[in-house]
Length: 283
Image 1 (cartoon, rainbow, N blue to C red):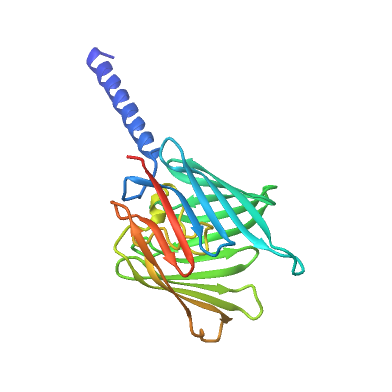
Image 2: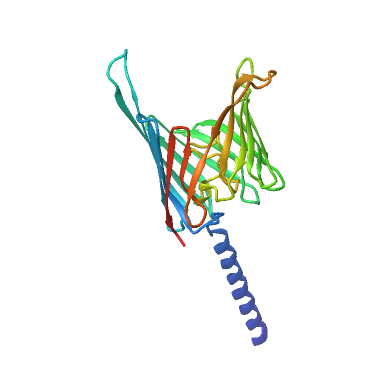
């Protein structure tokens, strides 16, 4: 083998190694869709003087959420006795592979477990498996999307399909309705939420980098949709009815917001509730 051939082989090897390094680097980049330079650090709910809650978000060096701490409190009385205060704390932690959250560990006081996520080529979750703390499977969730990458159906399954959720969107890709079909009950029932109007600002849950797809029945973060670009300002809630019956009159809720300089809400009001959102710069 002459010197020219040896040089060509060496250059080819170097280029191949460099390309592999670039591909690996891109695979491991964090997947962030946050349109702002802030991350959400805390949301705190207060209103009725006896109840409240807060969420603290902690991020890793890639600015992806690594832990969430949830605090809740309220009051109760026993047999008409004096009011007593209860407190509850839960801890969630998140693990990442190739920039996507693939494992979510849950510690909710008396209950522990974890969730494993699987994604499609568009980096959207298509399946998640929920495990008990002893590593046995509790249930499976399956997700379907439209051409705009909006979640349009989710099913919760054990040995059968227990729940089927159906979602609709407007032309701005904001979630406009979510219907929960309760298939395990006898008779089968359904519940529905409708979102009637939206602001033109940034949906606050988008400022939690790395959080897997989130919607009203798939999280415990008081957020309705992580794919929706904006915050809803009006909502209808329909109480459960049998599957073959029409919904009755809804309960209506109105929401108002205050915002920071990048359009993220810093305060939300509805009914007796006030929600404070705290952020910090990350870029």
